[in-house]
Image (tube, rainbow over all chains, first blue to last red; front, side, top):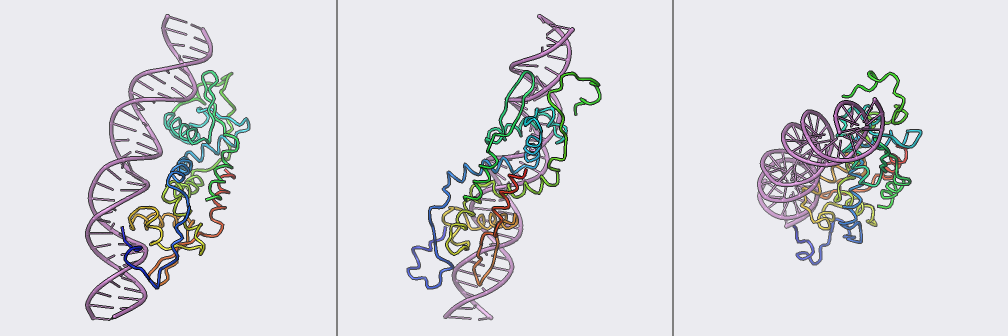
Length: 116
Length: 116
DNA sequence: CATAGAGATTGACATCTGTCGATATAGTCG
DNA sequence: CGACTATATCGACAGATGTCAATCTCTATG
């Protein structure tokens, strides 16, 4: 947009040094943003919390619909997003679908932050 | 929506134990989602990365506009979101505005995840 | 004081997202 | 096989979000 580099050969008072270095690339950023986008909805955070808190380590949709006060299709939708983000694992046994945390996924996501 | 509790007094094959416990409340979830929402955009992640990578620890808007290939108003908008989320600190000196990481904010956010 | 430059704010617009109702699919049981 | 149940998928729609052009504000400087 502006043409700083070309028009001022010797700007004596630059606002700060242009570091312009190998920071997060557009592709990396896009990739990482997907995970945080999955975490950016209150109901999805609550889903993760419920699944994590469950003693058996897994929960079915019927147990997740009530506490969130959302329709079943909506909960299914949120769960799919969490699965696609690599945070939840889905296993269908009989009529029910069981969701569980992907081991290490939370910690790995936390690592994404600290290694920004 | 459904009336599970009332119509089946003795369901002999529940899909799983209804833990229904003190998981993340709606308010807590809303609060935490705000931070992750701030992180859910690729360009904002890159902004954080650039600010963090800068040797001086602070960057001005003019240095952030070019590498992101975005207009100045858009960058200002993203920066405001990051400041509101408590991730960046803004300090205006003279004509320029300098942005820096809020100390410990990244780590604190990572902690939000692991303590879900 | 007038001018110029940095950055914030506003308004508009296209796109994305969360939600629901309706429907489809698949497993279970009588 | 036929009814029932648990989930997933589809279509629609309101509201949120990212982006830009235009404008405003504030500071420095001639």
